Image (cartoon, rainbow, N blue to C red; front, top):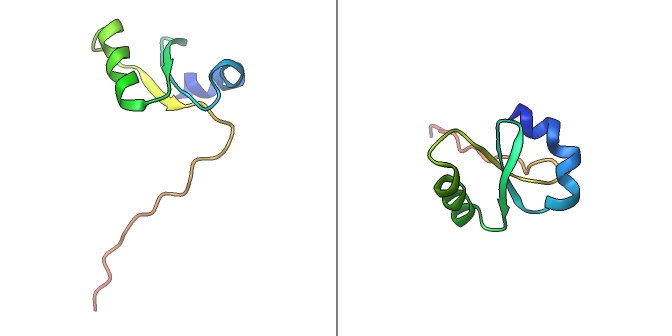
Length: 71
């Protein structure tokens, strides 16, 4: 994740709005659909740790975390 944050300014131009896969401080692929793209990235580079996230300069939407409310 740290590598993605460091590379984000350079990723925004060519990959804005797409998913990008980062491995060892470099982009190993990109795509529009997360699932098909991630499967293709693993197929190409083997099953090794990669970081995949959408390239955007907007903050992520807030997460809704349900909680238990006793009645």
